[in-house]
Length: 260
Figure 1 (cartoon, helix red, strand yellow):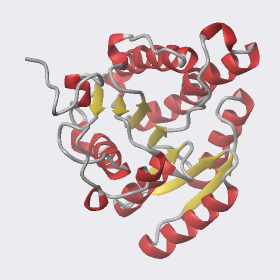
Figure 2 (cartoon, one colour):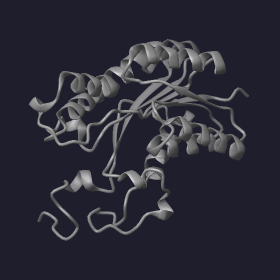
Figure 3 (cartoon, helix red, strand yellow):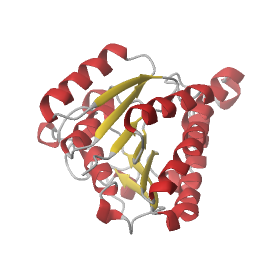
Figure 4 (cartoon, one colour):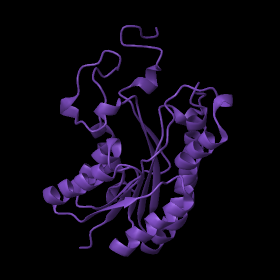
């Protein structure tokens, strides 16, 4: 049986890396895209090949750049002949707290391109391939409560791009349903950087999260692995929060200060 191929953007570190482990364990061939993390990508590919015996390739490219996206897809196709799953994990983010008017034009464009337009760039090339094989899985990444179009102070560009991406994800799901292609958005809660590559068994107690523990990369990768399964074809156009309950209570509340 031909192995399925998954492309993971921003797959060398963080949530992308943890997802790569899960998909490799499930037997996927992987194309790991990275922008600057060359050494991390190479080490990850060697580790996955040794552990699972899968073929792994690493592809440098900035998903905010349309030409890079075209090159990424062409490289995957030349190596594996098809793309069955794409995980749109990469997403530029400015950590400095800035009001909207403080963003430069270049910063704004880069964040919107990397978080929204990148999905268009890649989908325009990948969806026709998925149509031919009448099967495909597209996963985008959002943030907590993105489906409500919330305002996010100091994060205007990122929030606007991801809110637009939520709509685009649903549109792709509707347009491509007849072609055996599903599209869903996974929305991680507040998972700190050093927990993105950790497993659930490593999670520590956290009173600020309703379920009582810190979120990990495994929490996200397990959901992604479920959504890309053959038998998950009835799940499409969904915005799925993975937050430990924080999206239900809201960030203003803790377990010790619940609304009555």
